[in-house]
Amino acid sequence: MAEGSQRKSFFNRIRTGKESVQSEMSFIDHLEALRWHLVRAVIVWLVAAIAIFINIDWIFDNIIYAPARSTFITYSTLCDIGHKLHLGQALCMPPVNIPLQGNTISGPFMSALSISMIGAIIIAFPYLFWELWKFIKPALSPKEIRYSRGSIFWVSICFFTGAAFGYFLLAPFTFNFLANFTLGTIGAYKYMPTLDDYIDTLNQIILGCGIAFELPVLAYVLAKIGIISASFLKKYRKYAFVIILILAAVITPSPDWTSQVIVAIPLLGLYEISVMIAARVDKQKAKAEKEWS
Image (cartoon, helix red, strand yellow):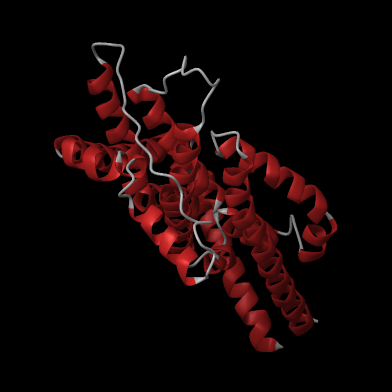
C-alpha cells in the first residue's frame, strides 16, 4: 500500500510539473507549436502528392481505373470463391466497361491534382496522425499516455483496412451496379460518366470506409475516458444499428441494397468488436479500483 501511494505521488509530481510548464505557455506559444506541427505535416503531404503526380499515368492506369475493368482481381476472386462453394455464378459479377469523358479543358489536370492530394492523405495518414498526437501529448497525464501506447499503429491499421475494403470490395460492386444499370428499354440513355464523377466516387468510398473502420479505436478511447461502457453500448445497440445503416447509405454512392449491405455487415461487426473492447476496459478499471481499495 505504501509503494502504491509513493507511485501515485510520483505521478502526481510529474503531472503537476507538466501542468506548471503548460500553464507558462501563452496562447501565442500554443499557436507556434501548432504551426510547426502543421508545417511538418504539410511538407510530408506535399512530398507524397508530388510523388504521386510524377507517376500519375501509371497510378491512374493500374490503381484508379482498375476497379472499372473486368480484369480487376476482385471479380475473378469472387467468381472463383463462388465456384468453390458450389454457388455457380452467384458471386460472378457481369463484366464492366466504363468509358470516361471530360467536358472541360482543365478536367484531366484537375483530376490529376485531386488524385495526388487525396492519395497523399492516404499514404501519409500515419505521419499526419503522429503529428496530431505529438501536439496533444503534452496535455496528457502519464496514465493517459500509457493507455495510448500503440495508438498510431492501431489507428493506421484500422484506416488502411477500411480503405482496402472500400477499394477492393465496395468499389467494384458500386461501379458494376452503376455501369450495368439501365434506364428505359429503347436505348435512349447512354452511360458515360465524367472523369471527375468517377474519381470523386472512388475517393468517397475509400475515405469513407477508412474513417468508418476507426470505430473500435474510438470506442477504446471513449471507454478509457469513461464516456461509454460495454453496458451503454449494449443498451443502445438497436439505435446504433439504425445509425450504421444510415452511415452505410451515405458511404455508398450507389442506391442498390447490395452495396449498402456490404458496408453495413463489417460495420456491425466492428460495433460488436467495440462492445468487447469496452467490456475489457471496464474489467481493467474494476480491477484497478479493487487494487486501490
